[in-house]
Amino acid sequence: MWRLKPKPELTESEVQKGLKMVIWDGLTAEVMTSFTEGAFLIALAILLGANNLQIGLLAALPMFTNVFQLLSIWLVRKYNNRRAVAVYCSFLARIPLIIIGCMILWLSNESVNMLLFFLFFYYFFGSIAGPSWNSWMKDMVPEKILGEYFSRRSKYTQILNIILSISLAIILDFIKNSYPGYELTAYAVFFLIAGTIGIVGGLLLSKAPEPQSYLSNANIIALFKQPLKNDNFRCLLIFNSMWVLALNIATPFFIVFMMKSMGLPISYIIILATISQLFSILTLRMWGTLSDRYSNKSIISISAPIYILCIIAWCFVGIYSQLYLNIALLVVIHLCSGIATAGINLSTANIGLKLAPKEDAIVYLSVKNIITAIFSSIGPLIGGLLADFFVNRSLIISAQWISPIPLFNKTVRLVSLHEWSFLFLIGALLAIVALNLLKQVKEVGEVHKDVVRRILRTRIKSNLKEYFIIGDIINLNNQLKAIVKGKRKVISKT
Image (cartoon, helix red, strand yellow):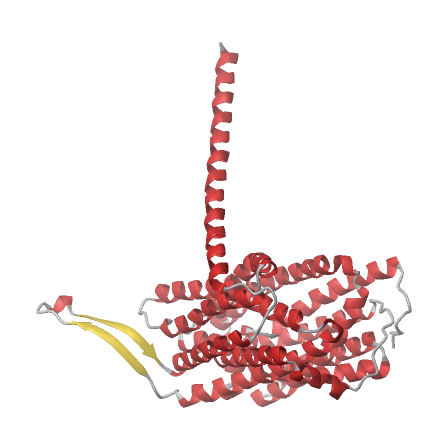
């Protein structure tokens, strides 16, 4: 169909063409995920009548299928053609999306189980394509522009994601309110568009060239045992596994809670997610500078407690009778969690790179990804079972003021735990346990978190002070200019 053979060397024009094709592939992939993942996918599952366990399974699929990345390594070593593995698997991953769209359109008895079945193959082939694509890009993109290129590609895809997510959410809310009978049809069209554009992306990706790779013939099983024998890296694996398990017990059900318990429109949920994403982007550079200057472990020790507090704060969402108070709390939670997530994700990725020996980095990181994928996929399943267990259970703690004058009688609900709140609290407690395991990990150049926190506080104050001083100087400068111009006008008139 296409000649996807790698070349011994790439010319400058071939590299430039490849860089353009990979950006276009990224944009088409972002369109595909924007139409079919996140809040939209959970909303579809709820519409089809999914229970908590099925929603947990839905959240677990993309993480669980990462285990099959081993197949990618085997295929690349067997055929020594990363481009073919990535492109063909990308095509195979897009086809299930089209099938899901057709299933929703034409079958009268749409089933959540059928949705899960076809999504498994979507994530399965995507997980196989991932490692071969990463290795291919590492060799194709010139090292001197590697960071700049992928940050630019990421910026384009994030902007597209924000625009599409908000637009699609508004469209869905309009259809739900005005034409509720066509809500499922809208989701079917989303999947058909996503699958079609995804196939176009695969065609574009196939036009990017691949430089020839030279692979080791060492035994895969023997290689994968090495990270487990490294005491320090094993401590990192234990912390990372416990952390993702704790988070994935609670986080996949935030959207379910907002949709089912609070009844929020999907446009509200997408805007909240956008707030989190924007603050994550805005603070990423700050966390990166601090992690380079001090240590990743220190950054995790600061940002992780912030995220844990955000999870605990979810227990208080919905206890207020006024909707605007609940929305205000959700905005604060998403803002803070966006800031914390940027630091956590960056530092957990960087500390893995830092602790992995240079000569075996790919093996160490692959083992880390596979093990964390297993625990990440277990988390939503446990969360679904716990949500079902607590569905008819609740704990309410109130403060009551009784006055001789009935008008001044007041009851304030302090804590109201229900099926979701129990879930969030359990996730937060397990995250605290996981954070204590971080103490066992040793990092070169480690700086105590209190020192970094003090420096961070000083930097924020300095930045605010600089902002106001510069603002005053600019305003003063503008005022002086205005006075000078005014005098000139007076002189010219006289």
